[in-house]
Amino acid sequence: MDAYNPRTVEEVFRDFKGRRAGMIKALATDVGEFFQQCDPEKENLCLYGFPSEQWEVNLPAEEVPPELPEPALGINFARDGMQERDWLSLVAVHSDAWLLSVAFYLGARFGFYKTDRL
Image 1 (cartoon, rainbow, N blue to C red):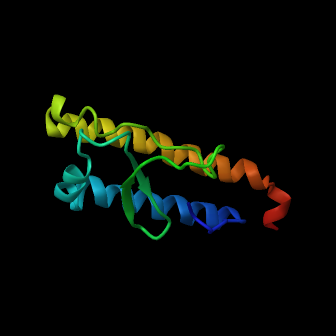
Image 2 (cartoon, one colour):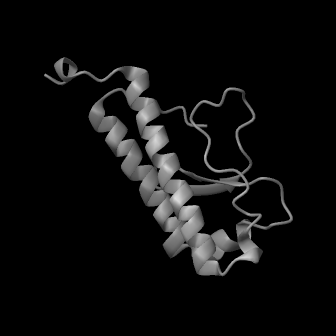
Image 3 (cartoon, rainbow, N blue to C red):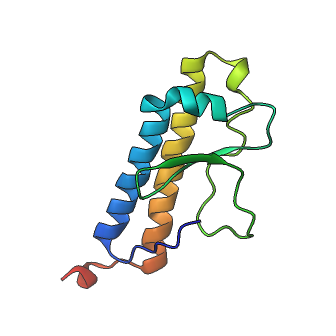
């Protein structure tokens, strides 16, 4: 998905902030466009946030195992069965969990130790 590989605590935090900003943009600023892209007739869609503060609704990554933890699958299926506000809240909760899992994955992958920050 991303060729970008954060290697310091600061870079992981920047990655987290960028992905978070992209998801907030999808769920608040670009909500109309986001709603339209989450067509329940399509296959399992996911909301991705990128370090560049952009977002994308797309199918899950095809490589197994994926490069990063996968976001919640099928965010589009419940769209028409719930009130829009409740559906957006559900997507937001899953998005928060994904953001944390990506940050912890990157942190564990590079083994950030206090001595490395000196």
